[in-house]
Length: 442
Image (cartoon, rainbow, N blue to C red):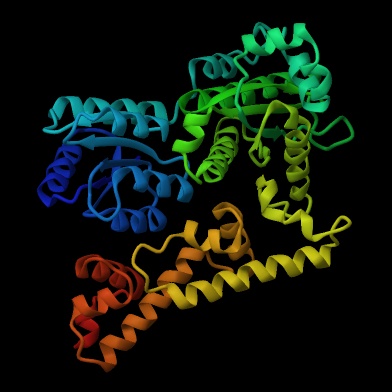
């Protein structure tokens, strides 16, 4: 069963869509509603949400911003956007962030339910190519080498860009691939395919099939939002070169690394979901120019090595590890000290700012110069609870003290601990303590 979150700052629309979904006959478990982006984000963090249906214009946080934050929290959540305006720019931004549909108000009931039905049906089904692979695991399945004419060139570009860029023939092929940038990042996917000396054995054919399946998953995810090229690399790795032209790089502002992080987590999630493998993903920084391909390739490979230190974590961004601080490879003790320092600084920032309206994990991570994904992992590993649970804990404890020891009204308390609406505050408070603020006051 699927859980759906409906977000609109018009209560009647929320209620109408919820009733429509409840009587649709679709395989729906829970239907949640929220009147703002901030309320919706709390719901996504605290509940299991599969599909987000959101208005695009909602005041303090737009539907586009909500999609960005939702993807950081849970990259696998799918989205349908609804809008009162048929604006190409909004639609383009929504599609770029992976929206499955863009519907115009006033909504046609059948059209809306068809859109929801299509998204839910595809949620547990792989792409046609991958479905063919899964159905054809027998000897009859024909395994084709992807980009056979280009894989050798692309791998040479990653290890010796000067040679590749110095050849007219190679440059012609690169032009055919439209590998023009000028901004690039490299992402590597390492599958856990142990050799014959391991207790888990894979035949050469099995290994080839699993790598083929992982490549198809990568291509399906990449084709939705990215200008990219995916191919096999030595060591049974899959490499993805991602590029931005000047315009798309500027439009993305400073959010490219967060989007790469979301992509990495989506890749890990879907490879595990369909192939039952815990793939390790290494992500490079973003640099300008094909001549830096060797550097980007080395960064992505180096990021993957951190899985040895954090073997319960699977997505690593090279920039999270502050390599310039070490003259030699850091010891386990140095790594532990740095991890503790990151968590300590994050806690200090939250302690001072937990009552700030609109506080996000992204903001806390930015203050620590690490990705939200890595900060969330370290925080949970070091403290035993996730970062947003800590924010809610501080807010709830402070609000409880105010309810018991002051005469402040509910809306004043909600305001002081960072909530937009007293209703939303009451909902969170009751979920946390099991009783409402008014019941506690009595």
